[in-house]
Length: 272
Length: 351
Image 1 (tube, rainbow over the protein chains, first blue to last red):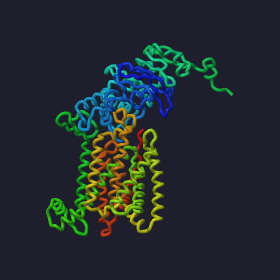
Image 2: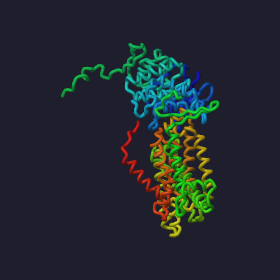
Image 3: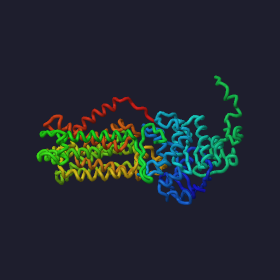
Image 4: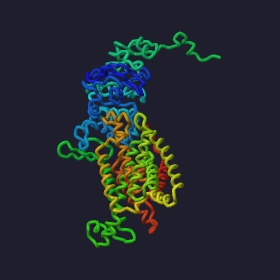
């Protein structure tokens, strides 16, 4: 287990969000963290990425406290796609992707052949090679998100964390991006952890799903084994039914209708 | 020689072993062009005045040839002023680039965090209580500016310092200090108020050789500090989390940049008084030419040097024999710059 959390207490301003949280991220698998808004999933991801120092407990990376490593060393082992990143005005795609090489570069080792190969491979894997010389400002949302993934990929880290990577994308681009993540995970065998909002996508793509509620991990495991109507109702407070996704045989969450018994009333036009 | 299409020409030089350097061809050309222009203006400045010296003889005098009188005028009298204009201009350009990048705002400049008004307060207090020779005023400006910057930084600090908060607090502190300055000028005796007002315009009129070495050493050290930090300024511009995820210790690095940026302004202000506009415009004008992503340090420094040398030469020549303080020239140019900024079509804001 390369990345794990031990007895973690997380919070901002003495206001605890998670207490005594334990979590192990399975190597080489795609782990998805789900949970209602403000349940602490992004906070957990920030702690796993060393962006947030825990008030107690520790995040363990390769057997040592993650805060014991130099910042650049962590960045060579673990990459992060944050929820919001700012593309500098007037930057081209290749320039942005090349910035992912920073952890491998030194003051006078600014562009090795390995840097170049990593950037070429990352752009090819994400399908942005043709956009290479374009300005990032001129790309569509889906293209731009692929460029950011390429930047994290160029970092060549065995572990990748993605914070809500699909948020600003339409459904087709969401699926495209998740397919890309799955393919990268399968081809390069790197460990991926993503925070996702869509439960059905989480069930479809995750090898390992982690359900969080009020800062605590409520359940984790293979989605087929752990996603039940009881769990979803407990975690999200949403009454639902679980059926088999006809495409992938993974759990598909169908919210119950409050109007199920009076469907005719709802569906009919209002009468005076 | 490059397998990646960066959308612009990129030069990679690989030396022995793991050494390698990468830079944009256009940026390098622009830096060279601006640098040569600045040197040409410098030679022009060394040659013009009440005692005219043709450019050829100026270069001769610099190389140690020519008549004693020519060497006296060019090397002893005019060279320190021109060198200081180059150094102070470069320092202002660099500090402007640092602040605009950190604050992610093309209007960011050291003035924003109250440095210049603080330096003015420092000078007024020093003139009133200590004395008014060059070193005393310089020390007063330094102390006042640094104190104001520190107060702004501490008041704006909340889980680290963020651009917008820093700007708002800076404006507030500047406004308070400006009224303190106003009150001082009204209350003190006329002679002192005039001396303070002359300092407050920013001028290189009285520069002598002994002022050059300390400024040169300080600017060199601070530039070395910026070089040692490598590309971290442009990584910080990508947002807190992205920079941290790429291995930048964001809070510490940003503080280092702020300290260097303030120190560069401090050196410039101590040497020549408050000179506005150069720090504000140099990075943006340089960027128009280099078309880099975000503002870049080296082109901003060369552009700053060019702007200040040219302004100082204009100040000397425009209404000769009346000498305008260089601060007055830069303020006038600043007005034109703002007009141009406003007249330019609004850029599309990137999400």
